[in-house]
Length: 214
Ligand code: ATP
Image (cartoon, rainbow, N blue to C red; front, side, top):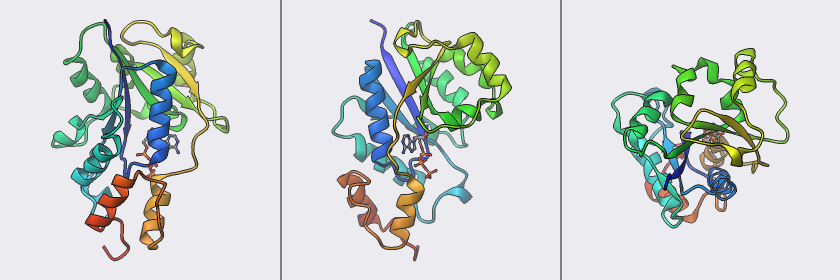
């Protein structure tokens, strides 16, 4: 049986409940077998002080440890340079059955930036794209994307067929939580309890992450 696998990339600096809720809602709505969170490598100068890629990865692993349908794919961190999404998809495709379905999950903002991505038009060779559309999204898609949408979009994401090649939208009300907000709160010495899973909070404190003094 073909598997249905979702991919959610991000810096996860740190992972928080909005990432996890969004991921789980997509799993449930789409009936995915699994959803992989894919932490991205970042140029060293863009890492928050004292927070390494390994620590971002460790926090995502802790966050999903008790949820069998969510898992972590660390392939972008195992490479020695920041990888393009197309590299990730090609590498993953090499490990899957030809008829397994891949769903690349992008927020609306990320989707609008797609024409700037390396070999962006090849992404659909390997995966469907699921755009998380928020009720308050206001920007219009750029022209290159409007052409792509006209050719490739389907209105009901549950009708996406085959291993990849189409685009659809999932409406989701996002939780008003961001990693930026969490870093700011921690930098001020304020609690982020209930914004991140308890295990992630314990890790942050045990390792003294995101403190202003770092
Ligand atoms: P930062 O504040 O550092 O920019 P972030 O909280 O936006 O970080 P990312 O690691 O950039 O987190 O996000 C990873 C993925 O999760 C992206 O696809 C992003 O659109 C999505 N995401 C982030 N925050 C939310 C949210 N509140 N609701 C739904 N999806 C989210």
